[in-house]
Image (cartoon, rainbow, N blue to C red; front, side):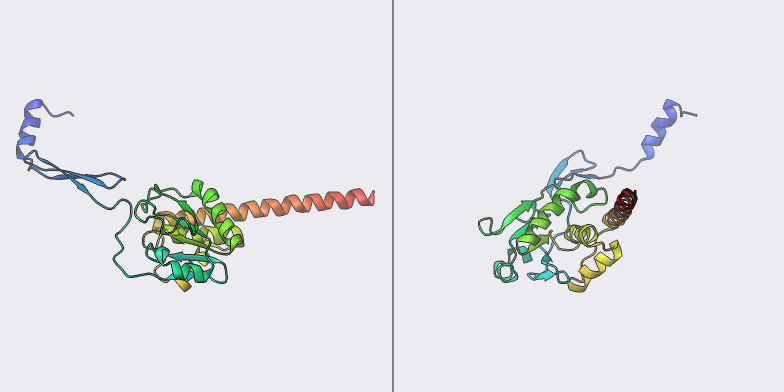
Amino acid sequence: MVPAPDQLAKQRGVLQPSQTSVTTADGKRTIFRPDGSVVEQEVAAGFVEDRSEDKQIHRIGSYPLFISSGLGAHNIPALKQAGVTHILNMAARAVPAAAPDQFEYKLCKNILDIIGMDLLPLFPELLTFVDAGVKAGGCLVHCHMGVSRSASVCAAWLITRHGYTAPGALGLIKQTRSVANPHSGFRAQLEQLAEQHQQSGQKGKRRSSKSSKGRRNRSQS
């Protein structure tokens, strides 16, 4: 039953004025105050500000694949010593390329560390770049803090290129970078990626088996 107009008026009369805050993905926050004034602020977009002095880069297992925070990505001597040639910057909105004349970069400005971010359709392009870096000598994957986005991409590479499970890939990454911890949304996507990769591998094996059987039958005839 819809309240009568007079009832609605009474209900509005008992409501307390409140302040409303709206934050968009590009980091702009607008605050609407009860007195009618509007305040606009600039805040970090899609990530938590990194205040630690984390300048190390971390090699993942024995692979020429490295992970770090934004500060680590600016540690040029360490990058050179490790043989890094390619840098995948998952937080280009917050962390600029340190040395574009010395390394090959892929800059991702619109990949946010939020639950609603879908990495699955982006993995093929991202991992192709990682492949190029690994083949050339070394690839660093970093985001702002080296915790969620970068760890997710490194885990995806381990899953699709070396057959790791999602927990196994993240476990290997945490051995070298203990703070690596993708949020629940990215973890679910890694589980889905691993399942898809396993299913595609099984289909490939069945096709190979049928092809071999067909060749044997032809040779016998």
